[in-house]
Amino acid sequence: MPSTTFSGSLTSPKVDVFVDMGNPLLNRTVDGFLKIGAVGASKVAAEETYHSIRRGSVSKHKLEQTLKKMCKEGAYWGTVAGVYVGMEYGVERIRGTRDWKNALIGGTLTGALISAATKNNRDKIVVDAIAAGAIATAAEFLSYLT
Image (tube, rainbow, N blue to C red; front, top):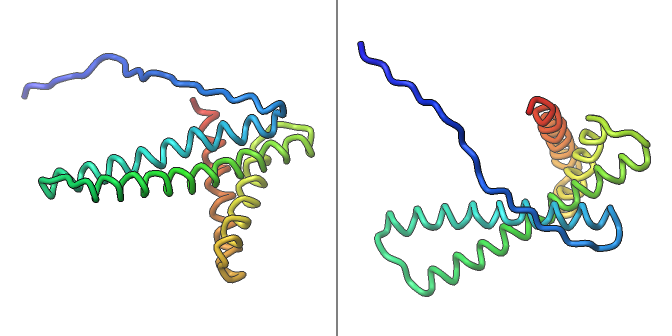
């Protein structure tokens, strides 16, 4: 039976944007906002491109809707990321150490804050806080593997 193998490496361009706000907390928060906001906007662009291809047409109205949706999604995810990065950095400064517990506490606080801001009930806020803390901690552990 014939077999094939794939060999090589995959690299991607690295784009770093740095905005100096004069404060490490603000610098990290803005950086998180910009990077994850761009990811959120890109997600919408990819989805809408797929839907346009399926429809077989693009209209000016649909393009305007897509751009608005990209801005909204980018701003939402950028805000969540900015709050998380700021919380994690604040916890790091308060605790005086850099470890996975900062991700856990920062994620939990961010999940609770974002959930409360969307006027969820108490049970939903607790569930969102636990989920965000677990996701942030898992992401921190995964970053140690790379």
